[in-house]
Image (cartoon, rainbow, N blue to C red):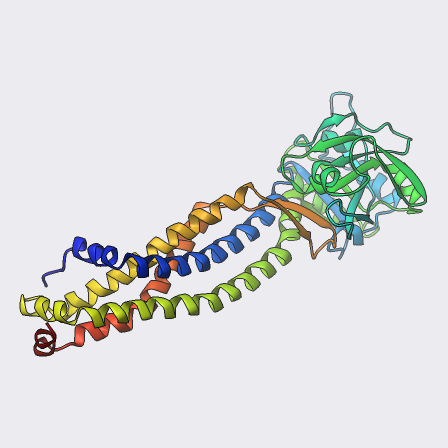
Length: 389
């Protein structure tokens, strides 16, 4: 079957460039929403997954879905600390960080509205277990004092959390002596202070979580077996990367479902617009279609030509929408994590998979919107076309 040249198809779009731009613009807006939603979900997932270290293991009370729901008694923490397979630092200390985790309410700098912020009690060992965290302003808090350090996102986003300012919570004033950066992970949305001081201030007799480092990754199975074999412990043992990946699932899934539902609704309008554009193109070119058929081009060639025209139109809209969405990577945004009920800051993240899905979505809109007009063009009789010419 002789095919109609691609240059002919592209020329027809250029001849109707005003209509083409308007239709492609509508598709670009839908594609922008679609891509942004996927980038938001990926940004949340990447932020939380990157929070964990591959050699670290996190322990929670059995059945606790998040750190704020967990409680580990001091005796149990001491028993875990004595188990085999735990790495030591240069001073011979076991790399185990026993941490209380609570939520406090702070007003945002932008509008004064309150939001939950995670407060973590930790120590120098906790900092050693998280090499991605470094103090970028001020200094580390001193053990045994009411000093705290704030994550970069908290310091910039909440009142009283910047370097040198004072926060009041748990019936005590806390001085912000440092701001830390964790390379765009969830720790940027936390406040850290001395673990023992936090437990005393919040009147918590138990830790929320234990974080430890294995002397080798293969030791995880042995550690897990030892903990499960002791009925006194009743602890869940997870690689830190797995724990944070699970923390992202509920929020990322909700955003994807909501965003994709909106995208589908908006896409109906874009499809109708493409269909109207292609029907108008067919109506204006009845004579051309008759001439093409008289020149020996079969119905299939006409169908493919008009369908390709619609797909090219949608591809233009897809590329424009994707290009606009890629600019969202420079935007910092925060939302509430459903698992922890605390604020989490993240960035939109564009991946090759998202780019491919976005362009396929745009082409799908073009195919659905262009098929019926293309079918009508292919079914025109040669006589009717030549008579119109």
